[in-house]
Length: 299
Image (cartoon, rainbow, N blue to C red; front, side, top):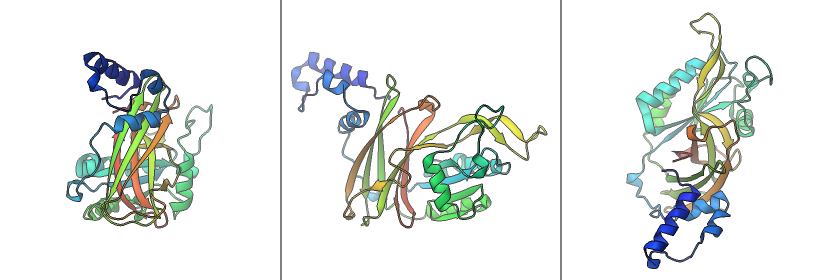
């Protein structure tokens, strides 16, 4: 269900007409709700849900798979195919893929007849510079714990990560307003293990798919340049910076819970209905990802 502002206002009006005792404090009138920033409005909507306090046994471990790539990388489509196979056939909802366009093979020329789209992001460039140890693509990172260019090994590394118990649980709540083309995001995190003050939360926007040019050295039509290639799981933005933000200044004890909220206005080149919010918790020094979650931006 799309949680739009006008829907919530209608619900408040219906509740008022049906009986004044339905409305509970704080008394939020329509004018007040209408002027709220998206993140604050979404906090109010999220507060209507049950508190996020899951048992560890009820939380599924999910693995973050980040693939660094480029639309001019003729060898990258085979890695793309492997990631799609692993997601759709092998690991399904237990794997969360992100494609990061960065490096020399992501260069673009505005106004050219092909490869004119800028798929790069500030966060993606920073990740490539800091974490791509070989300065080459395709380059995969499995929970930012294991990384290499050999995509045939990624399945085994993902399987290994899935044997671990989830150290934390994450819930994402979204409130999309089509009138302003803005989404509010609320992320709830519960830790099942103690964590230091180096534990960070990152929240990214991913679009899937984006149809555009891609080079493929094995293209069947004889030309390596494919004009309508489906780019999957494309990193579009980082809502709280490349490396995220600390969950707690003093660290977290087992059972500790944190709530963060954000807002994002979609630029015209991003389709909200094809976009997702990915949230994950990780150690900002070792980069290892503890847990990840995903939700549609307009759900």
